[in-house]
Amino acid sequence: MKNEKCKVVGRLHSFCILHFAFGIWLLAQPAYAFKIVAPAEQAILMAGQTVTVKVDLGHDTGVIKVRYYWYAEQSETLVEQEEVKGDAGAGKNKIADERYWQKDSTGGAIIALASLVATAQDSPPFGGQLRVPSDAIGTMRLLAVGEISRGRLGTRTLFDEILVQVRPEAELLSIDFETDKPLQLGRTGQSASYGQIDSLGKIFDLPVVGLFADGVTRPIAHPSAGTAYQSSNSKVIKVLPEGMLQIVGKGSATITVTNRSKQASLDVKVEVNDEPNEPPVAEAGPNRIVKAGTKVELNGLNSKDPEGEALYYAWSQVRGSKVPLLDVNMPKASFLAPQVSEKRLYRFKLRVTDKNGADSVPAYVDVVVEP
Image 1: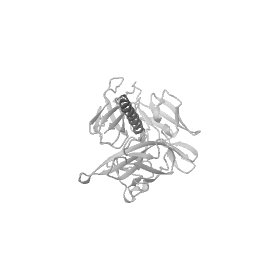
Image 2 (image 1 turned 135 degrees about the vertical axis):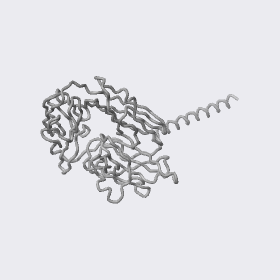
Image 3 (image 1 turned 90 degrees about the vertical axis):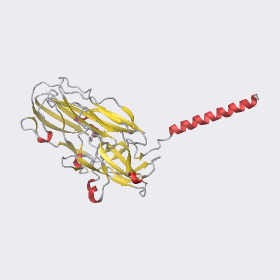
Image 4 (image 1 turned 120 degrees about the horizontal axis):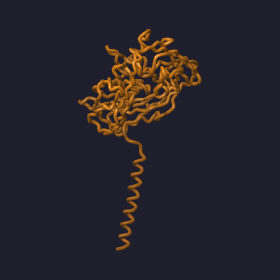
């Protein structure tokens, strides 16, 4: 009897070991849902290079096509994706930025052009050869949107998104500011490109481009492109993160940008209302995890103005496939968490402005949606 008990215990022990090993093996396996498997996350790609893109459908059956989109990391506006037809893809190798989107009557973006539309007949299935935008530089988002047929119920979409680093092979020849020179900010002689900049605390950015040896002019204003900023007078213009500049006083300053040992300078004269005004602070709330199908509320009520003035709110989406975001100019915005087959990241940005025109530094909140 004792030997039989030992045999049972031995078999149980062996079973537990096998079960534990199987569990470890399962944990080591990749998540089996719609996923970009090539190129890899944070891959280093060359501008204008043609790469093979590939997705793993996992358990997501019924996919009829996959559309691929390029976005610059700092792009604020994501639009409803539609398939490119006919000659509509003439600019499809451009960065999916506001400059290349079709516009509605108000100037808003309505369609982002897909760089590639792939089906099961392509090689690899639902993938293929995708060109990196020739004018891309720095951190780029590659978004893959899969469309699933549901018969009479129509279709639904799923997505995956990765970040890659894009570098031009060509040498940087020169840097330039795409603006008036010298730049006048304020009520006198102000460039219309910057809207109404007439108060302390206003935040703005400068369009900076680089001319490369391959003949391509690339936007290099964002620090992810390797650009660094310096102000000669921080009591007039202050350098903020993400390549933004803030008016903090009246007077003159020279803004210098440096990239790959090349430099350019811009003289800026600021004549604004000199009434003291501290910039507001945006608070977008804590990151969170939510279930698909639930209403998600983004709460900016903890944003504040040092002088206690009323605030104007501006919410936008900067990561994830497009979701209909409601009440984007209210303290609280909301959206319905979409159906997902695996955890997916959605990132939102909040900017607040006081009644005198002073802006906050952007605040971000991440919402992870799980099945």
